[in-house]
Image 1 (cartoon, helix red, strand yellow):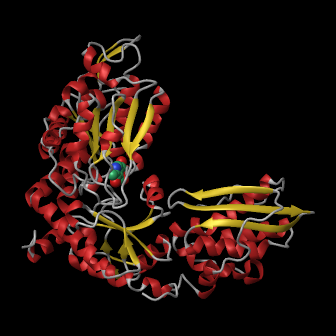
Image 2 (cartoon, chains in turn cyan, orange):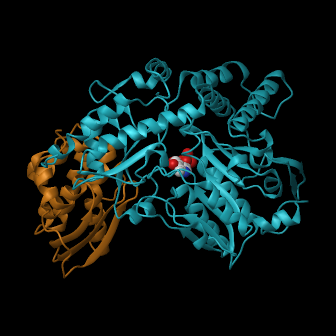
Amino acid sequence: MSAFTEDELARIRADFPVLSRTVRDGRPLVYLDSGATAQKPWCVLDAEREYYSTHNAAVHRGAHQLAEEATEAFEGARATVARFIGARPDEVVFTKNGTEAINLVAYAMSNAGAPGAVEGADPEVAARLRLGPGDEIVVTEMEHHANLVPWQELARRTGATLRWIGVTDDGHLQDPTTVVGERTRILAFTQVSNVLGTLNDVAPLVAAARAVGALTLVDACQSVPHLPVDVTALGVDFLAFTGHKVIGPSGIGVLWGRPELLAAMPPFITGGSMIELVHMESSTYAPPPQRFEAGVPMAAQAVGLASAVDYLTELGMDRVHQHDTELTAYCLEQLAGRPWVRVVGPAAPADRVGAVAFTVEGIHPHDVGQVLDDRGIAVRTGHHCAWPLHRRLGIPASTRASFSVYTDRADIDAFVEALDTVPGVFGMTA
Amino acid sequence: MDLYGELILDHSKHPQHVGLREPFGAEVHHINPTCGDEVTLRVQVTDGVVRDVSYDAQGCSISIASTSVLAEETIGHPVSEALETYLAMRRMLTSRGTEAGDPEQIGDGVAFAGVSRYPARVKCALLGWTAFTDALARSGEDISVVSDTTHSRT
Ligand SMILES: Cc1ncc(COP(=O)(O)O)c(C=O)c1O
């Protein structure tokens, strides 16, 4: 039985207004780029509008009723988002996006080495955050640049060494224990690859890091939109995701961290709203999560994100995951019948989430995307911010179809039908 | 689809003057970081005339074909003329479909008129050309006519 009945899926699609528009001379939009950013349901748009039209005020500032309501809306959103990932509200930090969430940890680690980084921090915990020459930061070869470049920079600033776990030909991670060792201080890895679609087995990665006392950060940008994610079950120390891929607004991301770690972390952006006491010479900081939320925060986006995760919770994340697996299986099946298409990543649908990237024999992905776009089909082409991974695969770029809750089989049918016209445009036979 | 006319397909399948040759006055390597397209391009100029443009390119059909047309339209021409051709190409490509391009001035470059309707592809079509002007500058040529304030929106 399908995750969603046809009626349910039709109702879901009706909740996303953009899906009813046309593109390129009246063609219905076939949106297969949800991995880049997902479309938004009415409830998210309404939640933001309602916030601005009735409660808008500066969160955590002001002594009036609106300020109270805005603060309540913002903190209520935090509680909702926390519940969605099995966390406590005070462990959830709102950031600008997933990229900033990862940078927050990387900068906390480089700032942790400065004298007096966090007044009164547990020295043992603070020591886990510090690193220097001889220490190692481990990532994987399938990371999005967002979970690679911040660690390269951290290595450069601290003198630590960056190492990585390789990717096998079939798109899985190599054995982490060959790279994670006594010198490893943090292991940062993605739960789901935005190119290969690979759903990484988190347990062995966490076990390898734990065995050597290293911290773990999971990039959950591509997993949170598609499957149930529970921070306790994962056993990681940090988890980052981005709002706009979870059918929420842009301009908001989430960092979850273990409370004892967050408590020992120095801030990365400083200013108003994150302080305890301020003197001309120096200041003390508020406890987490406020410590990491300097300035007036993105209250409307937080409210929108809470509405998005409520929408998904209502659908049921298990069903959302099943729906994604069905789409993946269907898409792989369709492409398998076309020998001129080479899919990258694992062969088994159960090992994949959210996306199917591929190359077409003899035709550059940009050209593939262009022909699809002409028929109203939105896919992504290029290296998808995972350039080293493409080098590893021996391809300069790829074309990616990616899914969300509103994606249906008809989208994939339209995509495959348009794909069949591609070789002909370039004078080849399909 | 009409973007991929005969000329573009021909040039992309059989790029003219392809390969890296000696002698050369300057060599540059340009990339389009959003899609990973790359071109290594060499120019050889003597007595104010472009004697050779040689290149090694990896990219979509638009960028390969455009670089091929570039070589065809500039080799054997005075630098000043080559820069005029570049300007005409750039004007057409950034016109959002309002300029068809003059075949007298840009030759097979007119085949790229359709590209200007797709802002995301303009960069592809200009990759080789901007590499070319950069290489000219590095080999000591004055390219101030193309680097004024009316820089393209790519
Ligand atoms: C796996 C992965 N990590 C991180 C990011 C970064 O998200 P954002 O650009 O919203 O910060 C993305 C998406 O762009 C992604 O796919």
